[in-house]
Length: 259
Image 1 (cartoon, one colour):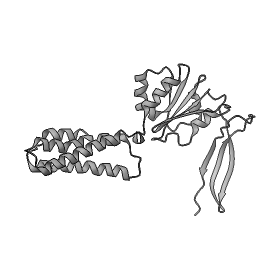
Image 2: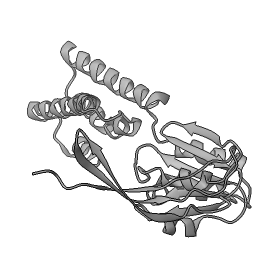
Image 3: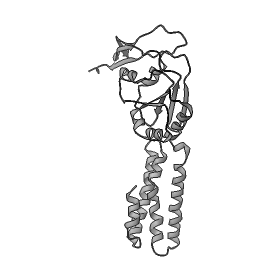
Image 4: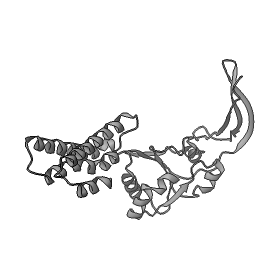
């Protein structure tokens, strides 16, 4: 992103070789855009914004050179069209996967000083924390460490107020879905779901009344006559009512591969 503007300022644009280099840069930007769309990863608008300086190189090189021929003017129109198309795609809501600003705006309109937001450490480190300071949210922001155990997360849960669980789909810190399980344990109220582009939130009306306790358990799971998984521990079964949600943690270990 820094190299392209520097190239635009320093290269001797009147030389044919420099203009060919500029054309190569635009070709590189186009191939990068194509590659990002084909590798199987969701296209993000921020990828396209980063490529904008590369698209600006060719119009700058031709404009700084001698009087343009018809072919030169065609290249200017082509590269300008690519630039405008790039900006248009970058503004497409379908590509704005990480709308942390929209999520923080939702928090500012929904939560009070008695409420809390739980976010895994990756979200607190980046966009969520920046917009949080900008909007001056009164709610408490609690950071959950990635890979934390059930007991470690339980110690960080608030004791009162509503609890909002931030979920950033671009990351998978809670691939076990442990936090929603803990927060719903014993609840009788339906949670409120709110999503923006690439980020979601689960709003619980209160912290969990209790934390599921885990007890030792020994059970093997056999598939096609071969022991595949060992269940080493599971959550207990408290005396809940039928309308209460139950969080039932299960600890599994892969069985040894048969020789």
